[in-house]
Image 1 (cartoon, one colour):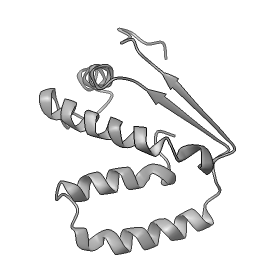
Image 2 (tube, helix red, strand yellow):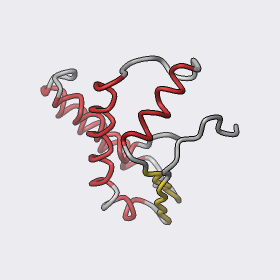
Image 3 (tube, helix red, strand yellow):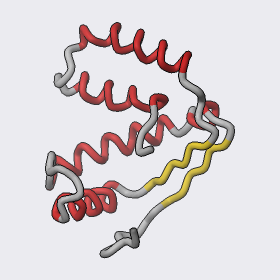
Image 4 (spheres, one colour):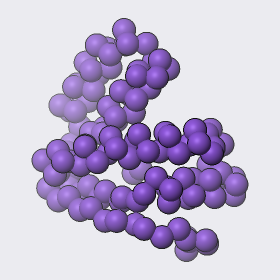
Length: 117
């Protein structure tokens, strides 16, 4: 899974901050998130793969060019988004080990031209 219920609030907060989601929905979002968190099983393992914003942008842009992802952002706008989300994930990773039985972090540094599938 690319994301989980337990870090979804990073995206909600990002889009509220940008005005894409009305702040008035925060209460409904929090109630829904709390309900789901109380009823969903905790993950047994969370793997956090870290990379620099530049590496992440290169991978996203390559996936967009290959038609594997929709083209939503590019260039400086993509870099700004990825940098902010990277910072949010860095803060989130401090609490992540308490959300599961096992937690692992790995730095992924290089850009792969043709990653094996």
